[in-house]
Length: 184
Image (cartoon, rainbow, N blue to C red):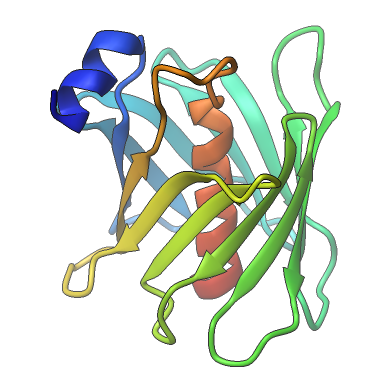
């Protein structure tokens, strides 16, 4: 059985996503599509704000997560907050950039557990997201030659997982990564 068959037969959500930055937007704005090319999520930033403030929404426009930068610092710090009705502004995760040379690295403390996001190359085009047990949760690859910033994300999951990772949360982490590295 191929990985595609495992992903589509055991999960409601697809295992691969594509994040693409909108080209002609005044703010940071992204479309997230599944492996079949269907729109799944939208990320938009708030206009005219100090610091990075974004909202991840499902395809119906329901806000799921708020992404907030914690001031301007030498090493980036972000928070992911819930944006769901009745649960708004509850902290879901805290992301802190670690001091490293050449390859970027982040530590994530969340309600889902502790994660580490580490760069695989010095050009910041490939990253892995691992849980505290060092199990790979996602692999992120930034496209080298594209008109707009574009990422391919592969969620790594198996039939033996008791708890499926929240895909929207993982995608929010990838947006944080992008904002830390490339947003002005």
